[in-house]
Structure formats: structure tokens, C-alpha cells
Length: 373
Image (cartoon, rainbow, N blue to C red; front, side, top):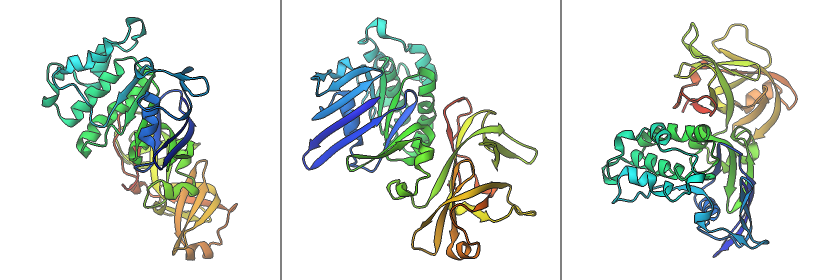
């Protein structure tokens, strides 16, 4: 995805430019009113930009300078909305095949049976939408979009209307889409947990502008973005691989950057990629490695940044091979004489790390391990 858009609507100006990941999920994140839905509607061809260029997989969909503006039906884009928008008079099977039958046979690379199996909707095929739960409707809507064999899948807050139970039902299916079908996904959300589960690339939008774009792990480590991420406290996100699902002491061992992180046991497969979310208040700092301590995770590192809130505490960004935030008191900062460049040790309790949703069948997409959620 290569997207450069300029558009004015009333008193709001949208001026964004970003590149999406070649596969997997690119997430647009920001508060309500930031312009996220306008962006996906322009990519879909439902809204025309004043100027700019939109290209997907080398195909130019819109170029104001070259007077290119493909109609929506020519863009080969699947769109999943918040509310599913299924056709109420058709069965699930007919809803699924509605767009597929309008896609030329030579362009169909997504087959019916694998989609039904992936989404677990085989038993629903003869039902009408009125007989489906909210989670089932969204799974059918995702299947309908996939079966058009799109070059790009747009998902505009597809889980926003679901309660936590239904969201937990649908999320694992969304996680698997990129790997199973190799279709790039542009995913809109203002829920950070969803993005940490799904995204390989994150685009932070506020007031119609792109503030930053990168791997979510990188963006969440930046102190200058903390106030824009809608979080109540500073935290780190570390990508890791499951090294040992259960050791002799009932802990799961994760591997990252030559280190081993011990956490509470959770259901995962050896070799599975996960993300660990660690609040700064769960990280302690020491000048030397403690000899006798209950901390199971002790990592050598170096201080990179000290972020002063003007409060009784400060946040310290450490480099342990990955960025890691620690929250300490001003008294500790003074007594330990901490400053950028000083070597230290980071301490994290294993019991502070508790598992979040995980789909052990995945091999490449990262799941999320929520720390002290």
C-alpha cells in the first residue's frame, strides 16, 4: 500500500501519507474523529480525495495528477464494516457467495471451503442473518469479503460493536487471515489491545495527520508518543518466541534477543511468536545483579532516556536488547545516581506476567501476552 491523501471536508483537513506492510495487518490507530474511516473509504473508492495517490500491489487506484479514479467495483477491495451489513433475505451461504459470483473466475484465488473451515461457519450455512449472534455475523462478513479474492482487505473497527466474549471469539480468526490467504489488511481501530494482537505495522493518526508509523513495538517505546496512545501509564511491548511452553516449575519461557523471559504458564506452542506487554511499574532497576532475590528475570542493560513527568516518579527507558521502560521514584533516581549511558540491571517478576488470548495454531502472527492487565 502506498497512500498519499489530501482532503478537506468542512473545517476538517485530512493530510496523510504512509506505506502499508506488504502482507499482514497494517493498523490505523487514533482517537475517534482522527480521520481513520475517511482514509479507508477513500482507499475503497467510496470517498474521493481532493488530491493524492493510492496504489495497492502496484495497481494505481487513484492519482489526481494523472486523472485516475477507479470505481469501487474495479478496485478489487474487500470491506468489512463494524456491523457486518449482511443481506437479511439471503442465507449465510448466499451472503458468502454474493460477491464471489461477481468476481471473474480467472481472478478467484480464495476458495469457498477453506474460508468456511477457517472461520468455523460450516454449521451456519443454511441460516439467515437474523438467527446469528454478533460474532457469527462478523465472521460471515469477513468470509464474504475474502471470497471476492481481494487485492486488499479493509476492516473498519470490525470488533467495536461486539461485547468482550464475542470479540474474543472473532479475534483469533482475524489473526490468521494474513497468513492463511496472504492478503494485506488495512485495519482501523482505537483499541490498542487489538492492534498489539494483530498488527505488523502501525500508523498513528491524530487530527488528520500521521504522527508516526512503524512496528508497534517501536512506537510504544517512544516517550514522545505516550500522550497520543491513550494509555494511563507507560509500558513496553517486546516481541518474543516461545522457547519452553512449560518448564519444571510451571513457567513458560520466552526467548528474545539472546535473553530468556520467564512468565506465568499460558497455552502456546513451542516456536510461536508472541508479544509481551510490560507496564513500567512492574520493572525495577539495580546497579548490580542481585544474588538472592525472588526476581526470576534479571537483564543487563543501559539507561537510554529519563522521562520526567514532574511527579514523584520518573520513567527510565532501558536498552536490554529491546527498549524497556521502568518506573522509579525520584528518591531512587537520586540515590542510585542514574543517568543516560549508565549500565544497570532490569528486574521483572515472573508473577507479574499473565497470559492474554492466544491461538496456539498460529505459526507466524504474534499473539499478545498481557502483563498485569
